[in-house]
Length: 290
Image 1 (spheres, rainbow, N blue to C red):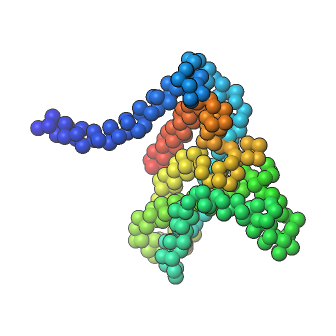
Image 2 (image 1 turned 180 degrees about the vertical axis):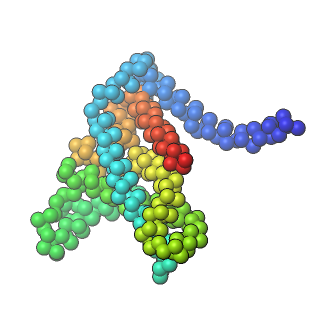
Image 3 (image 1 turned 60 degrees about the horizontal axis):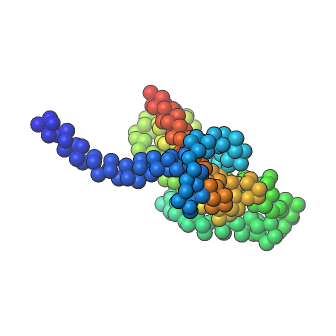
């Protein structure tokens, strides 16, 4: 009976394992093999170069610049975006008028098309006829107007802010779900003991929300590091690689340089980096639960 039960469990798990193998493990192995060749993606001839493509990544300044750009956007998302998502979720969890309407409004940006959002914000931030510069002119702040997406000093920050506006709704939804799992009896007991709202927030809300915050942080890092559509719609990676991220750099290696082998090596390296970051965050989340 024990063997039969074990086999039944494996039978139930087998479809998921097969799907994971077909769509993840096999492509990963295939892409890694292609990363060992110098190939233009068209001709059947492939030149075996071993680990040369991976070694080249170590000295590719543009690649590491794209990693730095993604890291900068991720840092802003981890701080500004998640702080905004948590504060809005905390406000909607309280007894306020119209909180259900706010929940719907705050979740609208994430479900919008990234291409449409990118094009709309490109128009808003345009240096010649953009809506933002027009507002600044009406407010008498025309000296602050600039080409937000064309100047290296502002392009990456502008893209990061738009990315945060587009993505904070996911964190808002997860934080709100986490807040609603906290028993209300804890707040009532704290109120009876004379604790004010700030003490209840610091002693009850924050400790119980740490696992949720770690989950949101992991999803934020993985999602932001792989940002692609919004950036290509807004800037295409410019000006001069200042908003280029790893996914755009891999695409440029494939289409712009016709170096499919090198692009595959970049993809594998990027995947390993993301897995390492996920592992570190997972270990941190386990310690936070102790």
